[in-house]
Image (cartoon, rainbow, N blue to C red; front, top):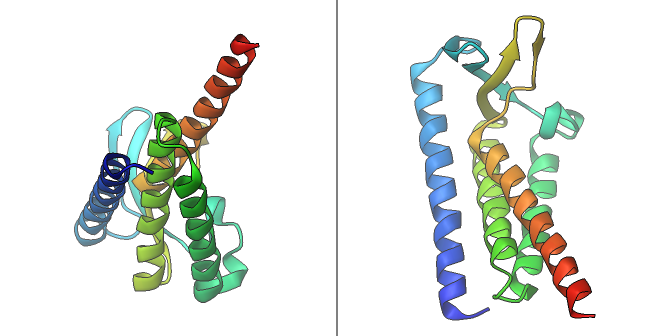
Length: 160
């Protein structure tokens, strides 16, 4: 990757980790476990701990098993990111967001043995899984990578 591409992508990773960890620190120090603060009729802050990965899956692997899986995923995404052409901007920043989010959750797991979750979308009769900004960064990053793949496919198709 070109120097500018590396630096700007690295900055996205750093910002994602800092924002994620800053918000988690505030949630951990200012909210009681299980406390809910309604922000909108469908959105609340709800402090909880996730001992697994997405939707509490693989909690049976415990701390170091999940740390190893997360580290392996980060290394794989870094490889994909590094080998990705720098002109593929959506993918480049998508990989940066995925790495930033994964590092944010990895820090939690190493420091606490769980990931701090706090965002809750809900309706009176339904609620979505509680998640955090790191999860959001990972999801947005994955969407950007998929968008880049779709745009590349369309460009290739139009060139034929």
